[in-house]
Length: 121
Figure 1: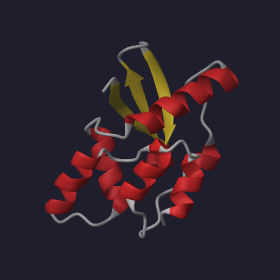
Figure 2: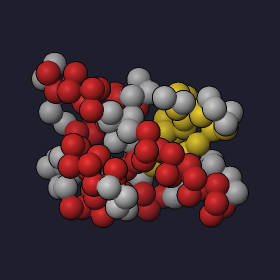
Figure 3: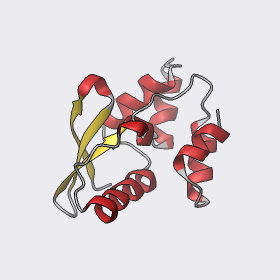
Figure 4: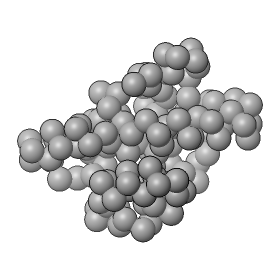
């Protein structure tokens, strides 16, 4: 995975990731930090139940669902020409009822991330 965690921004509402392929930094809103299935499984097995805590830990480990991050990076690049632009409206936390496996499947089928999060909560 080419995305490496660098640091959190303002109250953990977004993360700064570094794309080792493009050599660019990307501002990624919290709602785009969908954990990789292996990372999610690991922390659920260790007793973690809060989806936001799991998402934060997995982001710090660089174990996130790459399709979501790539799509966000591409969007920032095309819309603004700058991958460090923050889209504050996307910096929301996940609901406690979120089903990450449903979200990942929905995104992999090409649907919008926000719609997938609403659909799978």
